[in-house]
Image 1: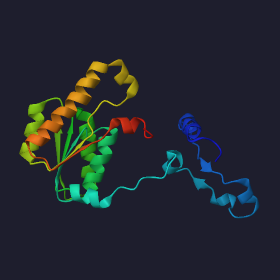
Image 2: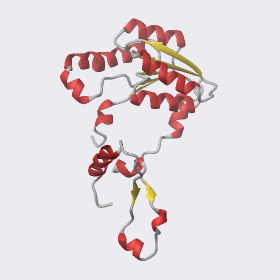
Image 3: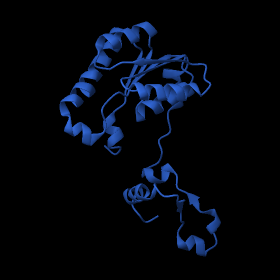
Image 4: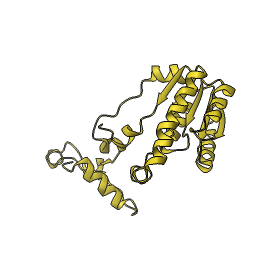
Length: 202
């Protein structure tokens, strides 16, 4: 309990390759007073490493932008985009369009969410956010109402080594998606900030 969140995270990374179970030990005073038994040791949950209270999603807002809507997720096969894709299907969009430039990632997330037995129509689109014609065609053909724009290079060390590609993809790609959404009269456009994903306290 006295260890910092950063230290705990580093520790878990070091031991994750081993077959070990990690538990949270309460204060010794609580154990001595019999308030908690050793058999009640708590398993470590992701919230324990978060360093803050978990932010609950605004269900009203989610329902307004997803339920019964045609939703496009750019970067749908990525770590952030794939979770958004799961949530969009879970919240019963009428159509879910998964867009990614990585064929394998797109194949993987489409197969996973098809197993969720949802009534949503699931469509996979192989394409890049820097291709305006492709983005315009997708938005128009599906009559997209909500866009979750998660497509971006976000692995900091790689991005720092390839700044021109990062600017082209992250900045120009976002500009193309925004302008295309305006031109096709998309109702809602949500930019998923990769800066927040890298530095949650920022």
